Image 1: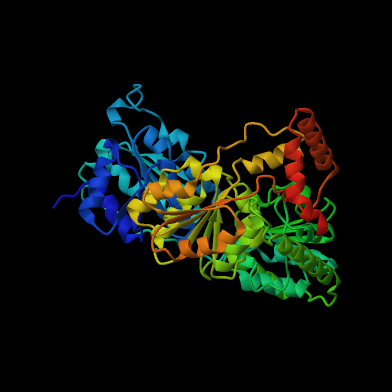
Image 2 (image 1 turned 30 degrees about the vertical axis):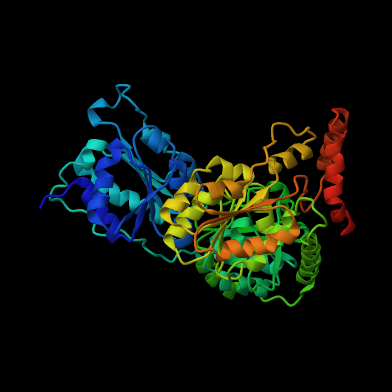
Length: 579
């Protein structure tokens, strides 16, 4: 029996392990969605906005490491995918986007809903091609899937709508496309040069990131040989924080003072699988750097590198470790881990509940979530202050996962990423830590949770502001402006949508509300009223930041908003008491 191009595509996706496609139907996509309906075994995950479809696919791919798929109809439909695809591509997760297109004879005519997807998606993909005739689709599909898996990024296949209905023909279609594994490590000369730098140094620090996934043992082994404290980037947290006696926390704007000091005082830096972007947090340029990355083009983008090592962290460390002379002096390590213990204790004291009926300290909210969450929970976090509190208070144990828009930095990522993660594993606890601004952006996806029966738990840090933007304004000496958000009861909104919802106004309500939500067998929203003026101090406060904050305070008072300064002081005085 003859089959259509779309049916052949669906067969290839199923054989390759794909189990669902995220999207919204449309006329140019009808041939593909009809093939899904006919085939069975490949679910259509209907979302409310295509941006959520792309984020959901990215979330699934981040959880499983396998190819995830989203689809959009021609013009505005697939154009809406672009932000989520940017995030997936920059996060290095394999996603295939099927972008339906206008009829082939109309391309270039200014037709209804016409865009040029193969140009639009080029920058946010590792592969992007247009199929002009049915005979191209088998090869382009295989090439796109393989590019997404091997290059760890987004592949976009643009297909005019009528091609989906065309005869698939008798030519060969790929039966299955799976990732091909390889051992990737530097040559002997490069390894010897790296060992020479590290053996000569007395105070080595390791900066580690997402490239350390699956290499926990290897990183611990080399840290032990070098007696090196391990500083992790945000995306390295889930892979390295647990069972790690060398951990000294994060550095960067949302990091710990101990992570900053470990970088500041080293005389050699070993970078493992990280492209940490913030140059002011690196050591001085005269400190030699050895950088390991499987993508060689990324080496040296942030800081001068003495020895570049191209390879995976696991394979490279395995090859490098026999060349390392084990160090006996633990002075640098002992000082940095002691500093970490002091910094950790200060942060933990900030998580104590506030008094009275004032809005809750977000540190306490995050710490309570951490305590009540499952041991294998998956956390998604919105960009902004939820990322700060997750970085500082959600602890990884080797079974938990922490997923967010940590490189692209998009708002509104937590809920749609949670949709993809929960769709991929309906039995696992998935908790989205959302800001009120981020949740409002894709609020319609609450209806997706209900319709798709996805038991995602959403905790909203509701501070009635774009509070991270306000922090940046304060540090820059700017009066906060345009950041207000009306106080919205997201718990009530959830209930109106047919979802379990509750509002938390005081600390004594928090634990019971979270327990009830986490025990609920469907989706749930816990809307927590948190302090708007909570400060998250960076690991090092610079003169420019002090100057900026002083200007902000002076200008705010002179503009007649002195109450804002009083509220800020009242909220944060306890932080000063802990220094």
